[in-house]
Length: 141
Image (cartoon, rainbow, N blue to C red; front, side, top):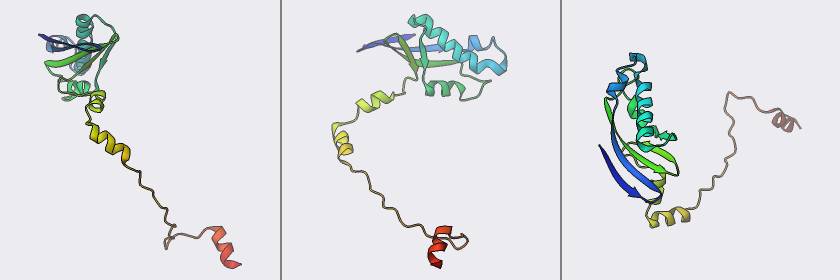
């Protein structure tokens, strides 16, 4: 049921969490919330931690079909580091991993690029707008 891999800074596991047995116990209008709570209870039991974080994409995948029809089971990748357990979808890549995987050439190119300097154009008056009081006084003088 669980595949284990050891990484620096903590362990990484993949679980298939059965949800149907639990959300069938709750009323139809509360099944999505019950599915999320089931994930948290399952992970706290298996990872021996009460500090559980669920990624945004995992949450969206549970709620994808609405509150009344959550998935019957879900595959979750769990990472543990410094007492914090983070659950995400197996194919989801975290932002930190994306940043660290950038090739060195891209990092150099980004630093070499100069921001564009925008020049301000004088404001053009539209036909329907009234001129400012200051501009009128200058014209009269």
